[in-house]
Amino acid sequence: GGSVYSVAKAGVVMLTRVLAHELGPYNIRINAIAPSVITTEFMFPAIKIDWDNPD
Image 1: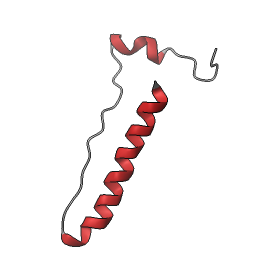
Image 2: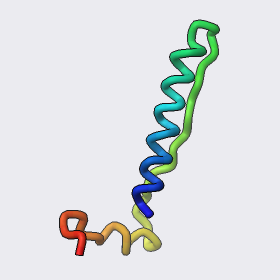
Image 3: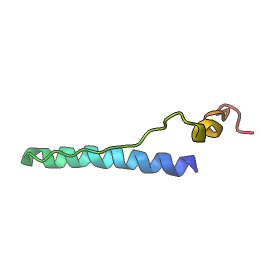
Image 4: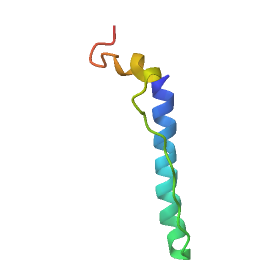
């Protein structure tokens, strides 16, 4: 579900930051590319979810 995706994405962000901090002194740059939601017909059902009402 969404929670697993969110945790995985946050993990990638933090790993990127930590590696950049650790490897920066050696002139090694660390980058990450993270996909985002794009409004398409496929995504309409997910976008219409009422996040404030879990029912």
